[in-house]
Amino acid sequence: MADRGETLRLEDVKVLIIRAPGTNCDAETKDAVFDMGARADVVHLNRIIKGNISLEDYHGIILPGGFSFGDMVRSGVILGKLLRYNLKKEFDEFIAEGNPVLGICNGFQALIEADFLPGLDISLALGKNISARFEDRWCHIKRYRGGLFTRSVGELVKIPVANGEGRLILPEGKEEKIYEELGENRQIAFKYATGEGKPAMGSYPENPSGSYGDIAGLTNNAGNVMGMMPHPERAFYRYMYPDWTRDYGKPEGYGDGYYIFKDMLDYIVKKL
Image 1 (cartoon, rainbow, N blue to C red):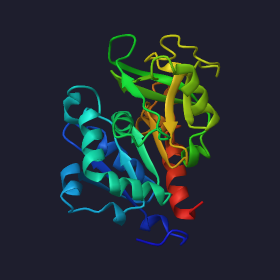
Image 2: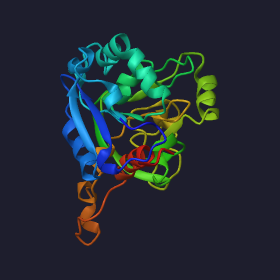
Image 3: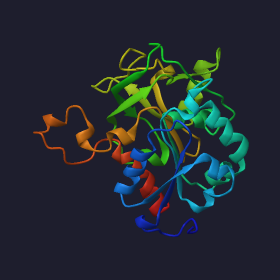
């Protein structure tokens, strides 16, 4: 592992993608990192807990989407607690060193359950969607901060969601206070929006989960840990979009999700 501050070549960058029983987006996530020229290793959680794989050997971590452990009890809770009670010291050190950690959908849920997000002694939850159904649809999300992950992301992007429990819930009676605190700390990465870029205002299906304050993604206070419910790996290439034929049927090029991975890897390479 190169020391922080030392310039890396993209081909030297190693990203750890942690999978668990039920994870189903690890291959697509690996392809996105690999497409950009970096190395991505998909590793089962048990190998890390047993000490066969060390976080110290990697420059970034991604927790991909899926249904880890069948989403028993609630989404991401078993994976999150396994991370917290077996790897908290390793994750805390990895994060404190400024290394990036990205949680996508189920990975976001696990980061919340492990208390790696949002930090600052704020406890949140991701509950069942207001619609009481699995929401699999394309959404518009508006960029707010996102730390190191959104430096080249457009202000309004189109990325799909696929979840049954994506509704961000703030502690009862403290919703407004904590929402303002997250905003003041610039920890709100994305909010659901209309196609014109206006606030979704909790309306369905623009805000498909009913998430408080239209929040679709959060970061820690330092900005190097981000969780988001939409799937950037499913919007990595332009041909993945349902309307790609409107561009004269040309599938070339990247989609909006590409830039999240790009910014993560650029940060690692340039050590910004």
